[in-house]
Length: 69
Image (cartoon, rainbow, N blue to C red; front, side, top):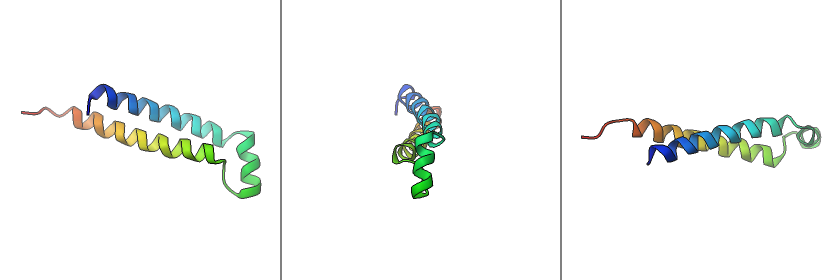
């Protein structure tokens, strides 16, 4: 995987994690948590996709840094 793509995936994952955390702490999520016991689906999906993108991006960055002979 190209190192630039890996860095972009990592950055996108971090952005989605931050947005997911903010969405989970929002008023709408608090209301949803009051009635259903869990935050909104949007917040949960942003957190899940953010973690996946961070992992894929990190693996790509670490794998791309090894020299091939």
